[in-house]
Each structure stands twice: as C-alpha cells, then as structure tokens.
Length: 488
Image (tube, rainbow, N blue to C red; front, side, top):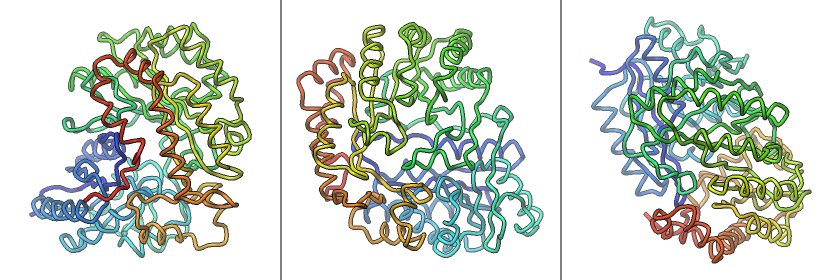
C-alpha cells in the first residue's frame, strides 16, 4: 500500500559559508496545487538535510533518502527540483536511489535547468526522467498526476516534455492570484547573514514570476519564455496575513529578481504598495531585491514611505565598479549615479540597510578592473557586499557566446569531474583570468571590504548585538567564502 501520491525532493547543493537554508517555495506551490486537487504530497528537503556535496555528506543524505522513501512509498510520482547546475551531482545520485527503492515510479523534473531548451537529453539519459515540466509547474503537475492515476500515457499530457516529444511548450501561469498560497514547513530554516533582519520568525515570498530583463549572464529572464507576471497587491497582503496568523511571521524576504520591475512607474508602484501594506493589522518587516537603474530613481520621500511601512533592506545587484564592465552584463547605469542614489538613501533613512552584489571576471576583466570594482564597493557605505566569480549558465547569451562550438552538455561533464564540490562553471573565455586567479581575487575582495574599521563601525551601529554573532562567519569569507576547503 502506498502512503502518499507524490513525493517532492529538493536536491542538495553545496552551501557557502554564511548562506541560509530556506524552504523551497516552488515545491511549496506545487504541493499546495496538488493537495487542492485532492492528491497527497510529501516534501523531502534534501537541501535542509545536507549542506555539502562532498562524498561523506552526500552519502549520508542518500542513506536517509532511501529510508524515507521506503517508509513512505510514493504511489504516483516523484518530483525532483528545482534543478540547477549547482545541484546536478546530487540530482544524479538521487535518481539512482529512486530507481533502486521505487523502480516503477516515474521521475519528474522541474526548475530552471529543466526549463532550458537543449538540456532535455541530460535528464532522459543521465537522470532516468519520465517527463520534464518546464516553467510553472502547478497545473502541469496536477494534469500529470491525474493521467498517472487513471493509467493514461504521459504522452497525452499537455505542457510536459516526454522522451519522444517533438514540441516543447513552457508552462506560464498568467493569473498568479488563482494559485493557492504555497504549502510550507516551518522550523529549522534560517536566512543568510546578509538577509537576516533579526526579527524572527521569517518567511520567504515572491510577488511576481519571471524577470522583464535579459542580462546576458543570467537565466532568470529566459525562464517562462521571457514572460513576466505580477500578483495583485491584495493577493500579496492576503498571504502576509495568513503567514502572520498561522506562523506568527514578523519578517518577509521577497525573492523576486526585482521587486519593482521598472523605474518608469516607480512612484505609482510604491504608492500602491504603501496603501496595501498600511491595511495590515500587524506590522511586518520586509526586504527586496532591486536593480541599480531602478535604485537611482528612488527619491528620498519614497524611501521614507517604504521604511515607514516596514521595508528595512534593499539588496542591489551593482555587479561592477567600472562602467564598460557593467554595460557588458546588461546594466548600463553609471557608477556616480549609483553612488549618488545610495548617498540620498542613507541621508533620508539612515536605518535603511543597503547591500550589494558584485561579479568579478568576464570579458575584458583584468586585475586592475577588479580592483576598481572593489574600490567602488568599499566606497559606497554598504552594510554587506558579496563578491562572486562570473559563473556561466547553460541557456544564457554568455554561455552561447563562450561555448558555441561545444556539445550542449559539455558543462555537465565538467561539473561532474570537477575537484571542487560547488557545481559552477566559472567564465574563463576571451583571455580572462583563470578560475584559481578569480577565486584569489574574490578572497582579496572580501578581505578589503570586511577588514575596514569603517565597516565594523557601521555594522556595530546598524546591527547592534547581532554584530558579535555574525563576526565569526564574516571572518570565514575572507579565506573561504564558498566553503571549498577540505571538509567532509
């Protein structure tokens, strides 16, 4: 006898030092839709149970997974995702365990990697896939489960990819308000050091899907075939109310690629958010992601309004400290415009936390331009800055430009044989710095940013007591941000 219709598995990935571990919201949405349709669902959060893809850690998780699958056999299907390049090692191992424990149960894959045209062969040949669900999975998964329940061939199910499919359609849910709020697990999760607002309990949310931009290094704008849709603010605040009443949530982290999609209607958008959030009976702290070209349109009075209704942090993808480099990755705003915008925000609302992310490496990058980026980062008065080597993702324009003459699955072979456990392909094209050099530059960037007395003074002032708690973690960033040292 089978205990549950659908088992959803969140594959582990290699966690960085200071990173958080959050509930897989996408699986929560699929679980809620399936349960609303009358199916029973169980989520196994491998990323919560396993923090590294090193051999010992992964083997321990796979043993636990085998035990959990045996104890609660899936009757209809196993869903695995979200699938990303950084989790392919664990996905391969998970598929092998599933075929041993549940050999007749179909394996269904979804997420970014499963949504990229040209990657189908990877799933069918390497991961024993029965079907892929590209794009939004809620309705497609329910249709798939219904077909399996009725013993109907999956070839009849629309909007999924089968081994013999010749037509590939990405699922796009236009009316996001029609979806049930995601099923959630609470307890044991934590935010990253950068995102932690120290006002628990927290929850993650999205107010939109897709991204209206197509930065050449980023996959977000290509998913859902480039379609971008937003939830109504009424629907967003209704979910916040539910989180407050059911889970006592006091902090929400919005994971939208950019919470406000454009600078054109920024003032009106903010006014709408202000009016909607004012209707909340209980106040909520929240934080958002923002592009730099939208940040520069953020006038001081708008910052004050956002802060007044609970917005406490803005995370900005600044990426480069030199203008040509920023242009090359799809962000053409000038450095001085960014500096001026940040100064205005700090003057109008000193307690608004500002953080930035920066990318080192890429076309025309040199040690001198990297130094320019780090100089820029240290001059902005950011509470946190994170530095990453430029990573190349299948499906992006950067990948096509860099690896146009190689097999589409070449990257998979590189990841699987890499001696580092993180599952990333670092850009090394066009005379760029090599990976080892870039990682050394990243370590130096962390040292320069976080060893400054000015940063420690600012962090103590803005964080208060939590400053003492985070310092040991911040110290590790200067040597091994990506946790690549020899550990089991």
